[in-house]
Length: 193
Picture 1 (cartoon, rainbow, N blue to C red):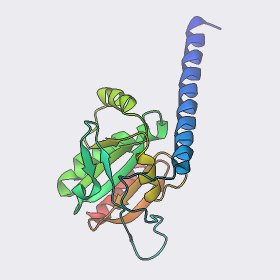
Picture 2 (cartoon, rainbow, N blue to C red):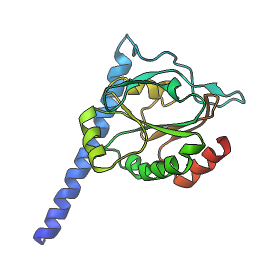
Picture 3 (cartoon, rainbow, N blue to C red):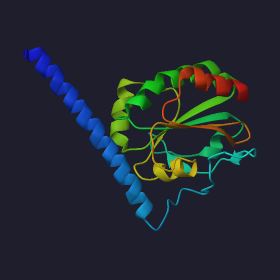
């Protein structure tokens, strides 16, 4: 085996190990959070967001810190079509979605669209990621408090990425476990603008 081939294989193994370790960390954090008797103080509502009935589910309220530590409340974006995207810097499908979200924010932001990324991890990896890949929408981050918010919005299993699209009235119009394509997101968003 050539040195270059061995080096590439070692890099691939290291990346795979990091992804697996990160996934295990998120799952462990999820179950740790569930085991705590005191739910997040920042979570105001824990309404079920599965949206299986004809009646739309009103968005649960929450407050989380942004990348600069400033507390942001979801009601800040009332009156807009709001896309909440739960993600992590180690999650490959999450990272594949981000360019589409940046593009959609650029295209429809002036028409009332607002993306908000909610990072389910510590702040340092998020800062390092944002130093390399700039994002044109707010990023909220907290290693523990983001998981209860995702659960309140219908993500009971902590799957990433997870996207929730809300209409201008703050009602949940669409939830997506796993990656959402640019085309699918745009189609949903355009009907709500």
